[in-house]
Image (cartoon, rainbow, N blue to C red; front, side, top):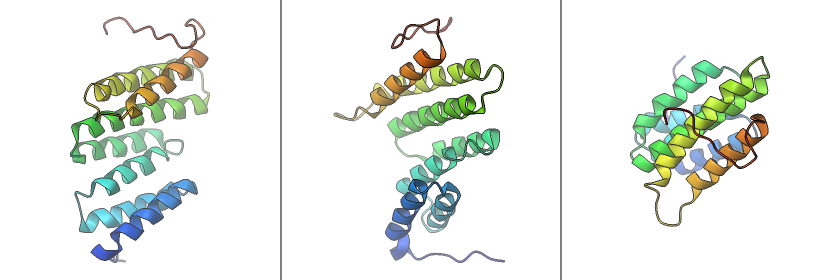
Length: 164
């Protein structure tokens, strides 16, 4: 069967629907809508970001494949700040998915992913638009998560790994 294309006029409403589906935890439906939008407007930044977030919402289902697909979206983002910020989001959500798995060593693996997210957030912070504290807020979330899952560090304290 062939997919049916949406109209350019329908893009704003489609993107609103995608956001609603994400809020309803139906990220697979949001992803599908974003793909429909991108078929007629391949550089639509709002659709690309919604697509990336929809994919990261699915990390608990198929972690490795979802991480790969989310990373494939990054180069399509036209703004350098957003590429760094959303690279951090991918790593942070990867870490959280790892923690939810709860397998042996998952806290250690998650800690590495949180640290990688923090590196991206730090990079994004250095180029953020005036008044935009998103990367700082995400950094702080990672620090708190590390504090909860790395008992050797005091909450709120970040100790860089060797070689950083």
